[in-house]
Picture 1 (cartoon, one colour):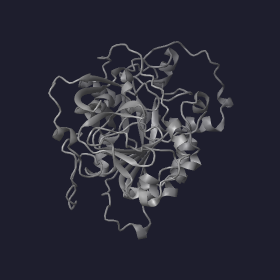
Picture 2 (cartoon, one colour; picture 1 turned 180 degrees about the vertical axis):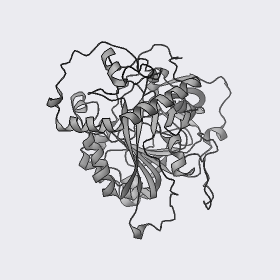
Picture 3 (cartoon, helix red, strand yellow; picture 1 turned 135 degrees about the horizontal axis):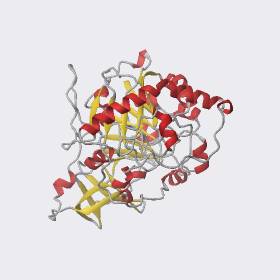
Picture 4 (cartoon, one colour; picture 1 turned 120 degrees about the vertical axis):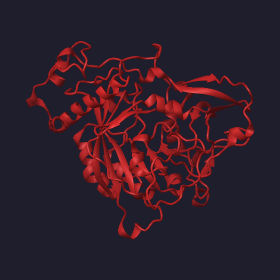
Amino acid sequence: MSVLLHNIQGWVLDSCSLIDRWYSRCIRYQGGQKSRVECRFKRQCFQVLKSHFSVRACAAADGGNEDVLQKTDKASKKRKRKHSELNQGEVDSQAFHEKIRSVILEGTKTLVDSARSVGHLNGTTDAAKEPLPSQECSLAALCEMAKELPLVDEEELEECVQQLVAEDGCTSHVDLFSRVTENGADSAIVVTLMGEQYVIPPCTAFLLSDFTRMQPLVHSGSKFDLIVMDPPWENKSVKRSRRYSFLPSTQLKRLPVPLLASPNCLVVTWVTNRPSHLRFVRDELYPHWGVEVVAEWFWVKVTTSGQFVFPLDSQHKKPYEVLVLGRYRPPADNSTSSSVTSEVPVEDQRLIVSVPSALHSQKPSLSEVLKPYVGGEAKCLELFARCLQPGWTSWGNEVLKFQHTSYFTLTPADEREDVSKGEATRVCTDKPTITPVLSSPGESPPPRRCPTTVD
């Protein structure tokens, strides 16, 4: 299971096992033929074995407590600036860190100790030492080129959802840039798109487009009960590395969140550790959308042995990231919608502890952690997504990045018999939803959905 344990401090997750469960049933379309394949995300992507800090940093980070932290690497040779040389942003960062430090340290220790007591985070690995996948992603460039194409008119947008695979297994008909594309089958599928092979999870929908071409998502008519986003925040390291294009903070206000959110929709935003970004989300972005801040959570990154991946008190990188959670409060005249998310209180300062992916910008899935707060039949949307999830709709200019087959190990299934047409084409009869775990009194009957769940 992906949630290894859950207590009042938060959760410990196994991201890789969750991804593997999504692809437990997988069909490959190749040369007009269908075949079963076993599909697993490459284990080496989640084998972060060593912490990135020095002996001196280790002692400073926890007053010598080496149970959570680990002595590794040599001390940095970079010249350390005096405290008086810190700029205002760094002073603000330090103040924020001191405010939450005890929450991170004590909560992580409790969660890691609990995980170790049941056999997890003990440093064992089942992955051979292999290099990380290094697929060059050109999706953002393709989205930029697609902007030169004429916009689809509103009449065509009325039919803006298309099925990914035709009856004969063909995908050549698919327009990925101006229509929401849906895999309505209850099996994952391996298909060829734009000359590359991708693994698409079951019961999922996605739109591959630039920030300026989100109209098909809005015109699809869906209202979502959960919206998670990981914006490409502007920072110096991104500018230097040019790993992806960033978006100025003020441009985020243009996201059509009020048009996509149902009343009481839970909105979750990943935020870097820059206080200016956190203030912007809390004080400008959420109020602009009509979203009320209800909690701040922290994703704590640890090694396979349970140590922080960076020193807790590092001036350069912290072993945690912030999530800001809020509820969408529509104007009074819009609050009579038939789709109203029942509001479950969200606790503040919860921790999500997991071994991070070694791949840049691959965040852990929050689907199972957030289920109790949005209800079992919630419609879920991820913005700025770089991968797909079963039961979710995803949008971004790199939305298929981590679906490329280079990140998976694909092997022929043991069973060699032909895949029956009925099995290969069973479909979800409604838009993607996540599997229910709760039901509240007075809830309407759940819509029909995939017979295969992701629980």
